[in-house]
Image 1: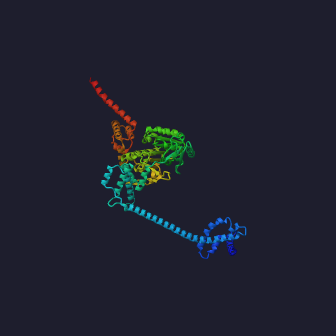
Image 2: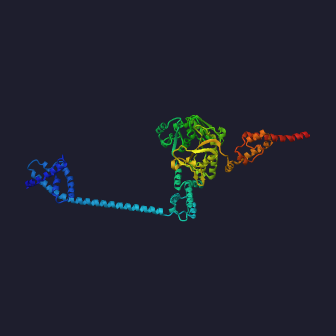
Image 3: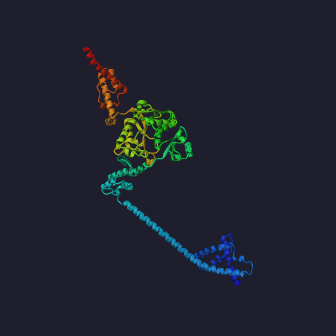
Length: 624
């Protein structure tokens, strides 16, 4: 039996060998159980089932194939029948097992795939349901009509401590309604009602007074307004300016980074600026700072000096110089050549100004202490090439540094600052020489965002002096207003630049550059401007002017010769000997008697009084 089985089994082996050789080319393998099993039930099963069974058999045969077929283990002829029986028995068992395993494996695989596909489908369905529900919820929330609080509700809120969460939610709702007012507004409510409620809520939540928040609401759309107010609550980056008189920016950055200062270049528009992200040492107490290698300065303070663009060997005036950041920058650009007049009206701030000038190695600067309005008399008119006027202002652009501005500023403060700024810019224009070969420029800047302190001042200067607005030379920044509410300004004010915290990540700033066209002055003060001039003067100044004119009245009546009449004309009075009223004299000329003339008139008045006192005494003596 065993011999017959061997004879029957032998012819089955060669075909698989040829098939494998033809398929695998150089790879040679002996027929295995997989080949026999494949041949046995290839006719009864489909191709897919045959492949699955073959793969299962491969897993089991790989271990055996490493040791060869079972015939290799028997060398003797006596053991061959046992081996054949063993192999045949194994083949039969394999066939049964393969049939069972292939059937069960295919069924299990199909069931697993179906379960996985069902689970995936169910998960997708759940996700779609959740997304749909969330979308419906958002639509419902947006479609819910926001209603303004009633007077009773507002009165009740005032009695309780402020609910910041409720205020913040109401501010967001009002902003959402105003951004789509046509569809979301409450019936019977006007835009003014929403704006008034928004002003009240913003003032309560962020701590602004009614005036300042009202001005900001008028200047910006509600969405941009929220961005601006949020930017005011965050500190600005710390910036330093490299002093090119002592070092280079690259060397300074390397030195500070070795000390544990994390910094980077400020921006493409500045060649000397560095921004400090983090520092393990005090940035204002390093040896480099004390040696004058850099100056701690806000990024917005770079802009006026860059717009001024001073040239070497020029005469430059800084009308409000303390504490010296802009003055030292001007000196660095001029490479310590030419001449700089650093003026500061407040005597207490002169110490910091001179200290910074010495620390930064500036040698071409003269420090002076005058009222900026008097500088044309001191330095002379048409005597300098460029003037930098960083005018004193309300500080509404630096709320981050000084939060007290939120509540301390009012309309009167803005008007007072604007009047002073108009006087200063006229003085700055008078000092500049229009015939300067390289200059003739005035740069006006403020750290305020108020239109009366910025565009209105420049528009006033255009009407009073022969100047024009020229580009600032800055590639970024928002253009200035040419119309704001009921105000209309000159179209050239588009060349001015505004900078905002929420847009440029620097303090609020305004920069304008003027070019003086001629040294002649336009028509003097009109009737409208006369009222502002009279209102701007202090009561004691007006009284002193009237006293001076009264003192001049008596000697004027006595003067009758032609030479005396000419001198009267020089003093700004008519030659007929009559004294005009203060208003008419201001209309004719804005000149007041000089100090020498006033002292001379007082001396003459005293002499006349002494003569009158002497006359009664002489009469008494003659009577005796």
